[in-house]
Length: 251
Image (cartoon, rainbow, N blue to C red; front, side):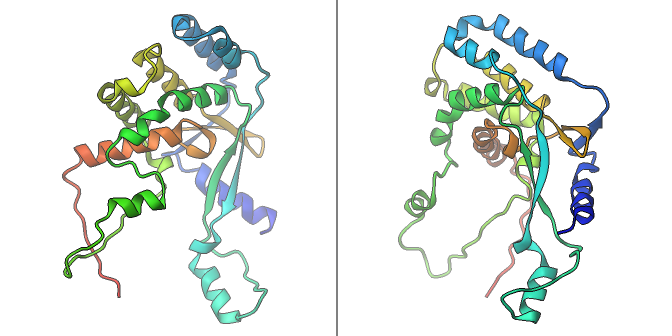
């Protein structure tokens, strides 16, 4: 993939104002202020070591890059089939999409994100819709099903970039209140919610010298999003009974 085509594909995503916003100011000072206020307001929830972990480090900028979804490009698949060779050549497939990644292992909010993930991750196994892995899925489904059973599966398009901040926070709040015993009692609910809100709202990164803000949730840059996904999807299952479903048979 040549550089110009790569940049073109990245900007296709970053120019989507539903998910990203280019910013001209540097928000780091305001983010640091929010972090300090959080620690000050809830210092009774934290040990000295935890406070040091959250505050005492030199943050670095986050950078955006994309991984080509080669397996989802019909043009590439057709090229592979038509050329039928070990090596195939195709020029700038129009339908090629990128999987967005934000590399920020030492960003301003990364440690807070990791910390909140550790605090709330015990919620996930107690949520009814949570399935840990393939073996757990096999244990969930019945060993014998009626002959007329229709097996179906559902795919959520771009799950992590389609979780609005307010709905994500609502889901976390709901399951914290439902499963409060699963979380260490010294961590107040408001502390968890405020910390999660900071992580979600202060998710910024650079690409090609320009700075952007992520408007919706994004997992590959936020540790706590792995623990946010299950509460959010479970809330969709609980509240959204008005979703129309079309089932297409495949033979």
